[in-house]
Amino acid sequence: MFSSLGLIGVAILFAFVGIVVAAIWTFFLGFAGIPGALVTTYFSERRPSGVGFAIGIVLTILGQLALALIFVVLIAELTKTLIGASTGIGKWLLLSVSWLIASAPPWMALKDAVAKRTETAYEDLQPGLKAQLSAPAFVAPISSLAFIVYYALR
Image 1 (cartoon, rainbow, N blue to C red):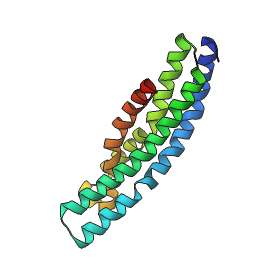
Image 2: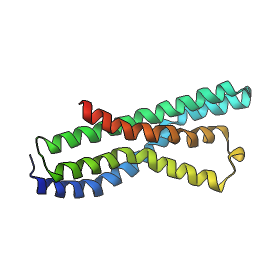
Image 3: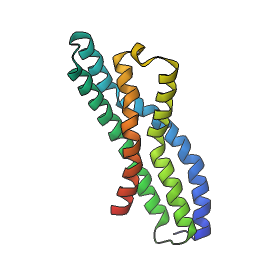
Image 4: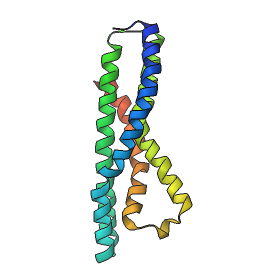
């Protein structure tokens, strides 16, 4: 579809546009974890056992992971379409940029979670917020690996 030099140009354009889209997708990751945060808050107020908190964190992780993996698949499919049967350095540059973009939303969320945790003591946070801030630590590495696995197996 594109020559190697053309793919380098596509990779540069894809990097600028993709990181903006990834930042917007990061905003939606927070909404994907709301059901788990609500469950965590509900169980911690009514039944202070750790089981409800664990269920809430698992639901938060699953919600954020589902949305992160959807983004990974979209970027991987777009990358496959753009690369086609091309070879050369442009292909590898576009693959590298695509991997960074596909794994960016959970890593951005993790950066924000770390910033929030350093400005406020973890014990002082509300239970739902604890779940929201804990989930990206699990979602980020999984989504990074998911791009490589999905692209290789597809």
